[in-house]
Amino acid sequence: MTQIDTHAQPYDRDLVPRRMVRAMLVLVLTVLAVVTLARLTGQPLVATLPEGAVVIEREMVLSGDMSGAAQVHAPDGTLIADLTPEQGGFISGVYRVLLHERKKTGVAPDAPVVLLQKDTGRMEIHDPSTGWRADLMGFGADNAKAFARLLAQ
Image (cartoon, rainbow, N blue to C red; front, side, top):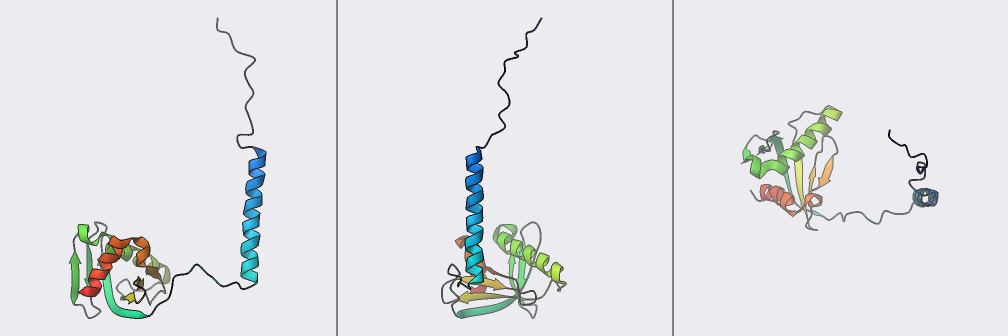
């Protein structure tokens, strides 16, 4: 016959100590209060990217597919680049984000975007039809170089 241990330790309900939960609640409420105070008093944003002047600007029409292949055309239809999946993976990914934004706003998928090079050294892509924009330096140097090559062509 098997024997059951009747003196087993009860289940510990406090997996996270109450003091820790209370400390986290105080931290969250403090951050919320500081952010609310900053917004209500009109404090300026200090951790924003420098604007900079536009040095080079180029309009282009992106297209791509799920394999990563991408095509880049001038607004008049001239082919700028026909990229294989290995070369155009990031550009194709940006195109898919653009498609998503354009579907939300009902804009045609073949509208041109503007690629900007600023005097601060940063590159930005902007979709004038939806207002969407992205700082390409935030995706890493290799991905920014993919778009830098399009400006050089």
